[in-house]
Image (cartoon, rainbow, N blue to C red):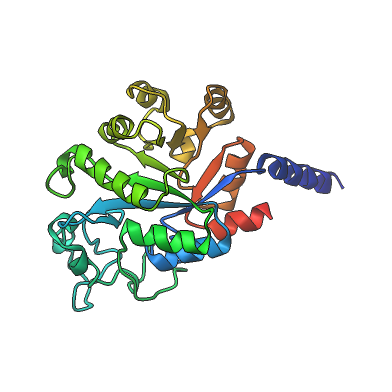
Length: 286
């Protein structure tokens, strides 16, 4: 009876803390479908996520492409003939040196992902951000978007445009799809975050915090206060989440995949959770 009472209390606590939580499908739903593909985003919407989390790069002809890497990763993609990409060629297929039409010829959905054996395998390509907006808004007009601009100084003009051009290209696609209100932009790169505010002062911004970074130190390195703090989930605890929320930040950690970690984050009263397994989170909340 004592155990049962404790279990009921735990369920009630999780239930109360989970109201209005923003469920974000990481790269669509990477645990279930090939990452950052149209089928992954479609599946995430069908599951019932609030937000699609995704990453963007840029093609040679200036198309904003949905991809975690600015190249065709050998982990998830095959070469033009459908063969595995050799390890020595891992960064050979530079998206910034390829047209979008050529990028679409490469399959990034059939190869088994070593970390996500439950993924459904199907032929899929890296879509444009424009394609994702159009498909997602047709399926669910209220869906939100959390878009990471993947930049770092050593990628400038080699794998990606410089931040000023990169941000401008992304904002142009958002504007063309009338998606400003339902979108926030995120990045680890402070240069990108500064550029977003220069070009679009009212855009909602999330500062990404890596596992080896200090949240407060990085926040203090930015010239303005972003709306969202998005740290590696293990950097959070009850006290710092409470402190950040008192300062009117939203706290949305990444990438929370185990049931235990999800429960912990909910009990910390985070505002959202980015996960490869939105099905697990949704089942727990329901």
